[in-house]
Image 1: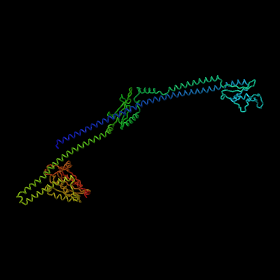
Image 2 (image 1 turned 120 degrees about the vertical axis):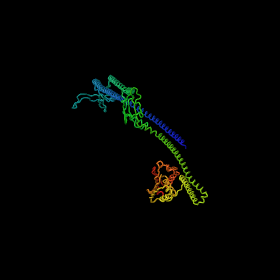
Image 3 (image 1 turned 30 degrees about the vertical axis):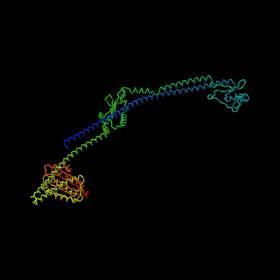
Image 4 (image 1 turned 90 degrees about the vertical axis):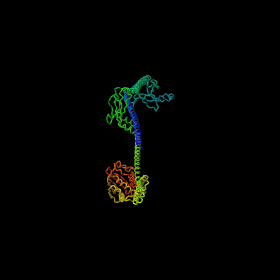
Length: 615
């Protein structure tokens, strides 16, 4: 890919990502504004509901007050009326009793007067009962069977001598009893048995207990008293009706009191605890579980009637504060204003937006990841492409040298003079063989890397003594090491350096690491090889004092086709496959490899083989 195309794609992807990011911010801001508006509407509904409750409570308070006053007044008036009624009833009953006693006396006087008159006019006047009167008036009295008998009536002294009297006819019934009458038990009609003073003939006289004129006078007096009593009762009922509830009057009194212009705002408001309870209840009903501050102020004055806040007036910031009139229908007086502030308003709104924020953040993260991974993949592919190009160039160069050498040697063998020289033929044949081996090694290395990538490399699993293998590898590399005057220090401290693995590939690992230490040294190489035990692990260290690497280069040396720039060392050749091959083989052997390097101070490789897993 051309560099211009790469930067064009990067710019387009960056612009698209920024566009999506800006759009997400825009929609999040719109969602926040919408949530804020909904929150403001909910709070306004809360304030209006609280204001309505305060107004209703104010009216209810005044109505109850007037109603209580009316009740007390009515109670007092009824008490007075009842006392008056009791007095009227008592007077009426007392008058009835007085009239009754007076009438009894008058009746007794009239009865006594009539009795005296009869006693003076007739002989032996005796009051008889109604039954006796009927017996005297019955037909038996006409046929000679009269109940009258001759009897002695007179006065006897203490010695039993008759002083006065004589024989008179008497009621001779043996069952007759002497009946004594009083004014209380006088019958309506009083019956007398009398005797004519001349003929001594018995007679019966009937007199009414109450004469007609007296009875009519009594009736007049009773009617007058009853009329007076009924008039008093009628007046009581009228007064009682006037003391009943007059709801219209109460409402008019309440309206007049509520419209009183000089009534202060504080006198129309309930206690601050009541307002606080109203706010709490309404906020819970509208699902607003936030801490709040509130205050009540006059609408036209810069003062505070009530305030409840955790901080101070500065906590009522415009962005977090909402307000409404308390007495919105009051046109003649200051309606007052209720303020409520939510210091944590944004917390609730952001909590309600968590789904939107989470989805937007997740989308942006996915897009950023895709964008980053795409750029990473493009750059990686670009580097791999460059490394592959370098690999092809190096491989071509590496293959070209032995091929050219073989071609020159083959042409020399075709010369008849050379053919006659047996030594030269043997030398040229050896050159051709060595170059073929070298070419075959290059090809085998490339094929081994390919098989490792496809997991097609079959490794042998048998015990290998690394101390012996290291010694054999160093012996086989003596010519290369001597060519650069390399100094190799062996510290094979591990007493038991046996691991399970493939001897050929393990030797290739050691060969690559020693060869790199030999090649990447500016002067005479100094190579140290050490084996030791580290717990259950077998440690192998290969270190040099060569040109070293930077930290960035150290991170990439195990990448395929990567070759560390050698600066002025132009004689260093390779495919960039060696260390990648080393890492893969070590992993196949259940080991790990690490590198430590410092620029111009050297490089050290540490391999750990788990002898427990390899056993």
